[in-house]
Length: 112
Image (cartoon, rainbow, N blue to C red):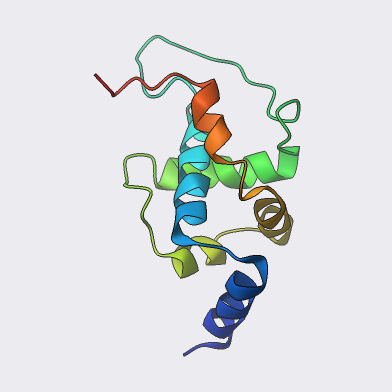
């Protein structure tokens, strides 16, 4: 195993990060990239800083959301972790239990 993978395992254990936290992070990243949920002609301007996401973190999440726009949020944690900036990693660890709330802010468009 790589040193980065070992580091991730240690951080996951210390921060009590679970697969659900990473799935919530991906869903949040998808929303940051496209808060309108892919609806054509619908544009939502969001002040992410006002919602507690610093500009640099929002940029990192936006690129992650673009990359995984149509993917299931169940992406391996080591793949996601390697794409997070140090600032985003810290923010993620500090906000892991609140990420699900971002989905509640924006109504689901793909549910019946």
